Length: 208
Ligand SMILES: Nc1ncnc2c1ncn2[C@@H]1O[C@H](COP(=O)(O)OP(=O)(O)OP(=O)(O)O)[C@@H](O)[C@H]1O
Ligand SMILES: [Mg+2]
Image 1 (spheres, protein in one colour):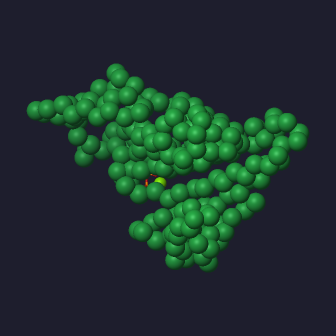
Image 2 (image 1 turned 90 degrees about the vertical axis):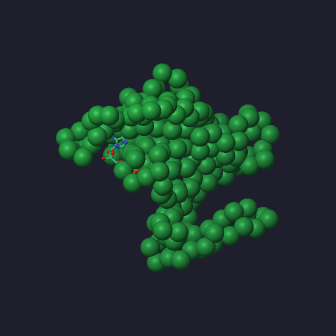
Image 3 (image 1 turned 45 degrees about the vertical axis):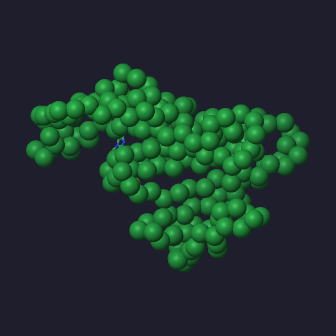
C-alpha cells in the first residue's frame, strides 16, 4: 500500500488570526466538518504593555468564558462572535495544536486533504501560531514543526508494509505575488486549476 502526503506551507496577510479547515468531497470522518473558523487572541507583548500608545482605559473588555464565543464590550455595546473555537491569550501552543491541527494531520495521514490557513493583521500572531519562535523548543514550537513530528511519528509506528511518500513545497503569497521559498529564482508563479490536479501552483518546486 502506498500513501502520498502533501505538506503545503502558505503565506500570510490580513487581520485577527483565524485557522480554517477544509477538505474536498471525501466521505468519512474528515467530511463531518468542511470548514472551521478558529480565533486566537494573543497576549499583549512586553513592548505593548509598556507603550504609552496602548489604550489602558476605556479599553474593550473581552469575555472568554465560552470556548466557542467571544464577547467584546466597548463603551456602549457588546459584540458577540461565534466560532468553532476561541482561544484566549492563555492558550498555549500544544493546546492549539491538539484542538486544531492534530485531527487534521491524522485525516491527511488517512488520505484526506486538509488546509490550515492563518489570517490576521501584522503582529497578530500568525507566525507564532504556525511556526513558533523556535522549531526545536518543544513548548513554544508552532503548528508546522508539530505537524512534521506527528507525520514522522505516525510513519515510524505504521505497519512495515506501508510505504509513505512525503512531498513538501513552500510558497509565500505577499502583495498578491507568489514566491517559491525553496527556489528563490521562481518568481511570478501562477495558481492554476485542472481536472486532474485540482488547484495547484504552476512550476512550484517540491522536495520529496
Ligand atoms: N500566543 C502568543 N503568545 C505570546 N506571544 C505571542 C503570541 N502570538 C504572538 N506573539 C508575539 O507577538 C509578536 C507578533 O507575532 P507574529 O510575529 O507571529 O505576528 P504575525 O501575525 O506573523 O505578523 P506579520 O504579519 O508582521 O508577519 C511576536 O513578538 C510574537 O512572539
Ligand atoms: Mg509573520
